[in-house]
Length: 512
Image 1: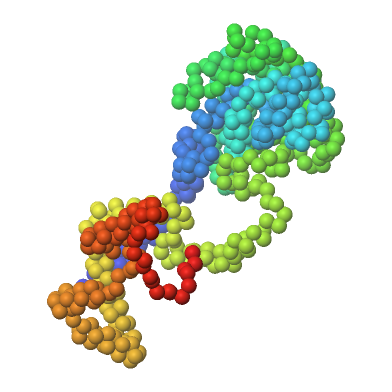
Image 2: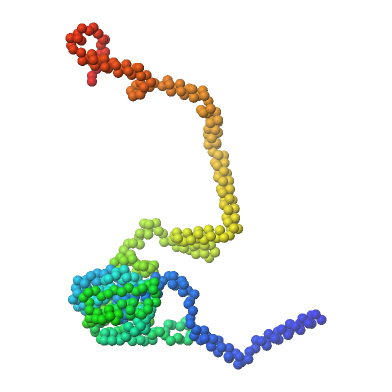
């Protein structure tokens, strides 16, 4: 009976499972709709920050507030002029030379000025800025700021473009960016970001891209403004924007009164050959205008995207690692330096493969630098302090290692003595000699012998302290000299009455 009941329960369970697998056609059709409806609802919500955002922020060269701070004096330039300024700032040394040249030639501007510097060893983007003396007057006031802008554009071009648009929206909201006789301000929808394949995404209203163009394409007005005024309330008090007022001699109208002014218009034809590509975060080049102005540096028709030329960097170091690896110029034959420095590519590859195999096995790879090794040591110290069991294991292992090392050394010394009988015999002989030799400190007879030997040693004849212990002898020698001196000073008659003294000959007179 138990077997029958078990089979009955099993059959009932199978029947229920088959019924649950069958779906109502209406429900089957509704489920995809529900799943699709859920996706837009999720997409319509504000996108949270991606998980990799902290990593990207830590790898960024400049933070958004730093970018806004350094780009505030340039964000309201016309798009074409801004594009060439961003290109030129990647060559800070050339910009400083161009600013000096522009100060020395205050009457030169436009295409004519660009042709005058055609023989200068500057990048074409820098040469094009001499057409706008007011722009070079601003850039020449702070070379360090110029270098930071160029480094930011090389390392984070997308972030630089976003910062410019963010600043332009602030200026527009504060009422200081609008169309007038010098410029035309328009807005156009930003290009949507490409959606991943196979994903249903509801497009949010794209932010408007603010475009600034000259009202007359052949006449460009360079703006000058106080960032603290035109942008309204600054969002980053810890990163205030810098203000570079126009030098004396540059007419900017009522810039100081209203916060925004323009220099005298510059008539140009081909000096502006760059433009901002806001959708892709880079700079486009008008090849025809470029070739018309740069006769000795022609470009092909397909070279319409700007590329940094490290030759014109003039040794200025790059700020980020990616730029250093991409643009660092190596001299001819520099590859051979690795061999002289003992670097072997094959050994480096083997070392890298060994490190990867260790990581695959769960073994932590060795530290790559001193700071990483220091951090690991500090982490291990903290772990030992927090885990008494680990500390006890470490102490026990240390005692075991020391005991094993001492035993190994003793065994090695024993083996050496057994192998070398001569060494053993010499050691035994030296031990017996040391035991048989009396100790001087405990044997008075030995001390007495040493004193007698020292006393019997002949003294040196010319020793200055030889007569110190016999003053009578020293006094007699002194008196003898005095007596000789007195005898020599007596008159001849007095000396003739004395007795004649005869001395035996010593074999001739002593030569002095």
